[in-house]
Image (cartoon, rainbow, N blue to C red):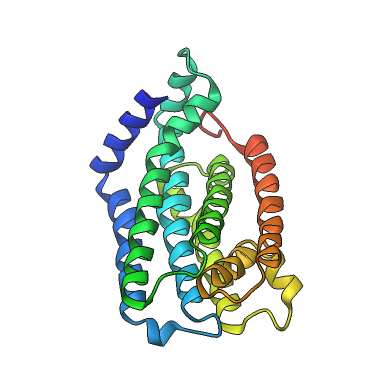
Amino acid sequence: MLAIAHHELRQLVRNRAVLIAGLLMPMAASAFIIRSRDMFEGDGGLGYIGAVLVFTIGGFSLYATTVTTLAGRRQTLFLKRLRSTAAGDLAILTGLVLPVSAIALVQVAVILTVLAAVTGGPAHAGLLALAILSSFALLLALGLATAGMTNSPEHAQVTALPLSLGTIAVASWVGITGTESLAALKRLLPGGASTELIVDAWNGGAPLADSLLLLLPTLVWLGVAIVLAARMFRWEPRR
């Protein structure tokens, strides 16, 4: 698994298109959001900005890059060759997504640390970490599912875009308007409950028990995404 992860990390660094589109652009967008935070701040305050940053990095650095990477490795028959080795399916997939997952976590840690340095830190750092990890787990599982219906890295630009932008749109909607109206709908949408949880964790004020309940919709979506990934993922090129 570690050998696969090391190989994948080298490929990510060498691929300029993935490096720029999947890793550098989200960081640049996040820096712009922090710099212009007064323009973006809605009813969710700084917590809303934090949620948008999380889903900007998660949607592109993690989700979209995962789809692109797996589609490319399938197209070159690298996935098929790996299955002929002693490594199991879980070890193969873990090795392939480990570098991009680690990079995305480092990115979000750095950018939120910068936000905390210039505005003040979150009220509940542990709750914030829990919200980020659950959101990234969901995006990773959705990435595996989307990769199953993606024919090539070029095709990934089409298949990954709706969900990447969709989760950011949901985070923006929830963060700007709050959950005083249409709360059930907002929490059931992918990223909606996570956004509210990030807002609560950063801004404080909400009872801890109520905030922890917001994990349930994300965990349900995670279960659905895992089922979809198991059914849709393909190891060989689609015919």
